[in-house]
Length: 194
Image 1 (cartoon, rainbow, N blue to C red):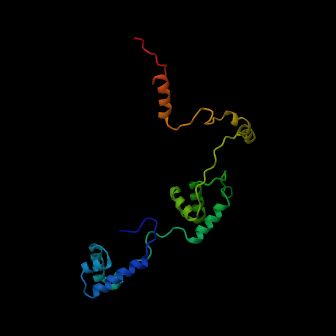
Image 2: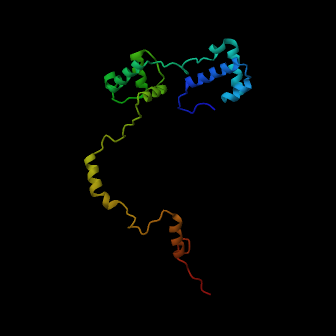
């Protein structure tokens, strides 16, 4: 069944279950009985039995932590967080904008540990940093002129639903009104004379 993504595994509980299997094997229970009793697959019970046969209870003890050990210690991460909070200018960059390659360079300078810029993001998330994108605005932007335009000109320019007649989000309704009055092609209907 496995552990759901993002959830922490209960290593103590897993080890306790393996040690229960060792106790059952010592009592002479079969692998099938151990699998049923502990709710594991027969293959898992077979692996546990082989490890128990070779090393006894010691063979079913936990191996410790899972996964690779972190390359940066907790104090190094705290120091990195403080260094990043001082800003990019403090580290010799021309703008005060942090990018992943810049953060990777600071990590390497401070700790000697080289990270690929794409992997730096995992460290930043552990430090509770979030993605921030600078607003893209023209250098010539005149905020006062924009406020004046919005206040004075925009009310006269903007369209209102009442000005164009009854509103409808359906093209079908608008098309059916036109087709009733104009014969369906946008042209007046000519009556045939007989």
